[in-house]
Length: 422
Image: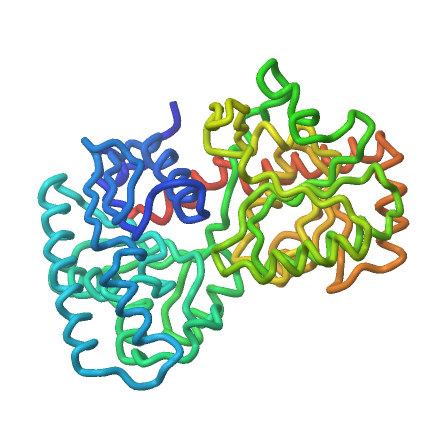
């Protein structure tokens, strides 16, 4: 049993977001916070528009989901333009008013003491929800903690907009009863500069205290099921297929290894930002002679069988089989896949995106690094590492220990204990 936080003990926390379902970063990190806060003595409840949390501790309001038709209709009229029609303003207010009332019912039903706002006051994918929360906090003076993952100014699609007044008011708001936390130092500095509010840096974490799962009877056949031979080099790209993941650099690296046994396997699907990038990657891999595998249809949240009777594997079943992980992202709010690779003791090739260079790399993690493009030196380093098992073991053990020290649940517990002591 962990030491309870005096304030957290028996405190009722209401987590609020547009979605608590699946494996997106916000849902995953919120679950980790909830687990640690529950260990510290709190009760946790959930409010969202899409939910996979138990019914008895959650309230699901479909209009709070960013994919709800009314919110989609609004989004088409406020992003990428600089003028909004009066009817748009009216409908923003209407939806915000409804969601504020739903939020009030949520707080009353579960007797919530503190709201935990998961990215709803940072990225405006659901503008009316952010407005509803801001007005509710201003009207009730209720204590709240905002867990900001990424801000509107970090995303090109929100730069040109017809709602600067609402963004200034609610993304995020400046309220005396609201505490702010960010996932990297750069975000905290920018928040202070733009909004004049201080924040705690609480990075994403992984439960390094629990030993990583390995190969068992269920996942022993992963390689053969994905069409890989035992002597193939399994290069895993454990991300979605979107442009900021820089997957063309992984293709370039594998091409220049000049080894037909090297197979580049991409775990997640495309489609979040269209399919043009996916088609470009396929064409590039074809031109470069790279064996590129998209296996998202074989990967799911749970072990199960698909409609064809084939096994479906969680990502945790895939990692133990990988020989090396590529993570050539151009931009990340933090970089969960990097922590996963450290956790599963896999060597990593990482592009030096800003959060990695500023927050993670200085802590001493040992990786092969890209500075925007693949060099001959990196190719030689990768070849040498793949041949040198003792060096791989030493490198990955160092990363595991550092992950445990800086990004484990023990560290998260300390930070949340301080953040929630009002």
